[in-house]
Length: 412
Image 1 (cartoon, one colour):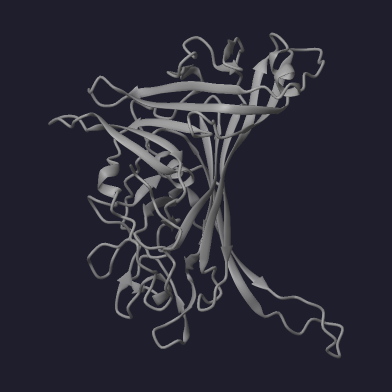
Image 2 (cartoon, one colour; image 1 turned 180 degrees about the horizontal axis):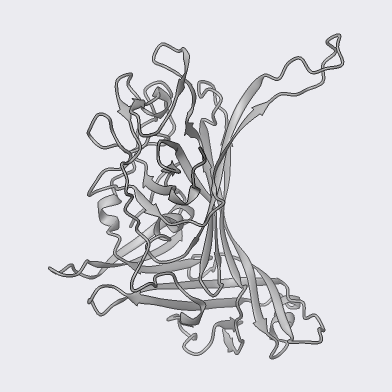
């Protein structure tokens, strides 16, 4: 019998310890802790998911035959990507994962009929959080659990419906084969039937886990058939000098007509390596540079952008997009992007027979005055204060120590 993938579901929870899923206090346990660190399910487009890959050594050997005789496994990799229609609720974890720093404030306290409203300013931090990602497959009989998940890339695509694509790198995954408490490799699974959690994920030999019972509770904004940001809702930002312009060149506003197809990429350079005692999975990760790049597509009005590229001028981008209202609070879901110090790498102007448009590639630099290359502001209903203590400073599982080093969450 075949199963439909449309009933699958994807949820994320922040980890207290690298590669150890946050679990309920029950046995069997479920991923996520209600009230403080819930599993946040998000709607995704078809085609995504974590792809586990076994690394086999297929080197040539003089072995007396013309056929391969040996293919020993030397490691495993787990990478995944998801595309989704972007809104301020489902963007929260991907943005936190790639930026690492969230400066949160309360916009409006909760009332008897409305949720509290919060503002989050995401800035590049020296540490990033790790997540556990649960994928409930098809009818949910089987599921996939990836832990030690880091955000490698987040691309915002300015289409008619704002679309985001997030790329993850995981360090543990079920189903899989791991050593038990006695050091014997055994098969571990994950699904609707309770199964033991391996020590590599914090198991103690008796703790069992089960996928979250359906139906999942999605965090995506949904109001009267709407919810995701749309291109038509883009407005000017709130930074100085951007009251009537999207771009500045050397501090001077310039008039452009921004088109669909523009995109912004936030990226982390991550080194993930095997360490002694980590088995076949990567055992340590180092998070290096924060990178920002992208592409601006705009109507041809003048030669400001081609000239800015050739003269290596400082270009700044600031825009905001407002979504649906939040209950009856009088406030709306909102996002603002500020890239204060861009360099245009190329801004070609093809001489077509139709509409003339400039397609400009850029890279973002740290602004020496503001101290950041990128800032994204969200207004939503996520209370980051309850998540602030989720990251612990201790080492990973009892059998493999030190996984928490270098992975964390700054919230100031």
